[in-house]
Image (cartoon, rainbow, N blue to C red; front, side, top):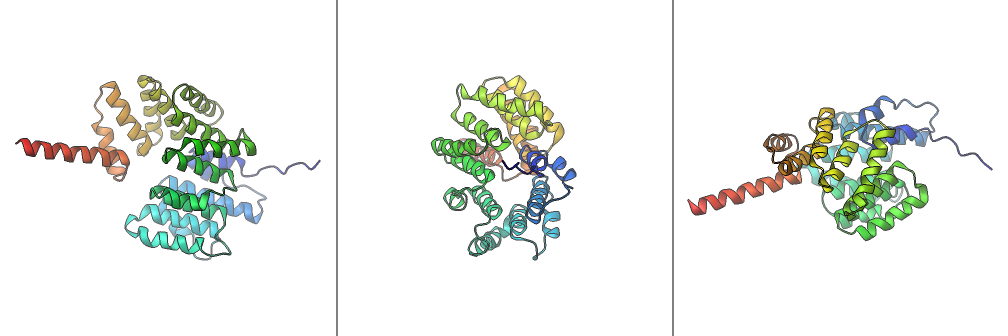
Length: 291
């Protein structure tokens, strides 16, 4: 029986999936990688920089001779850093996807899925991600189907992931997302998954937010607040942490305006900011009609 080769990128991938982006970057100098593995390593490192908000670094370091997966990652950095140039970024993306030689590259399809999910164009996203091929593509499909409120389709994707590797970090994360979406008694199962991550790996904003959201679903807002403040210490600008703190503070009857203002400053496009400002506008309109 052939012994499977060790997965040299396991630690790097795991750090990235759990939101330990700086650790992924710091520990990316992995020896003895094949050319394909080196490209995957570079794409994970650049995506970690993107997650930390260092878009310009990624844009300047990836030149036009870089392999397709890195060109795709550069497009993600361009898309996120320059909302005004979204159209040209998306047309460059379509150009890469339409090239028969490279259009089927899994990292290119993944980035396409991420960008179209940001655009809330879920059907276009699924065009590129639906056939799967990697665990990360299946995990993205789970997220897209949950955003479409189709937990039945999300569950089918999760079943495929469980058949490929039941214990994989992405499979566990997919399971937690689905459990949270289904709600009820499933929330406790999601909480245990995040709890398991926090015991095995370093605590990240992503894991702390996961646990906190479970706590909020179960009505434990005090515990949720403690977890979220710990997440805020790790990253004061993380949009999920700030948004969750706004919701948590409202439930605890505490002032939430500071968190909302921080969110407005650092992430003006966040859904919660848009909702809050449309609520403010309708409040102002109501005041004007009664004045």
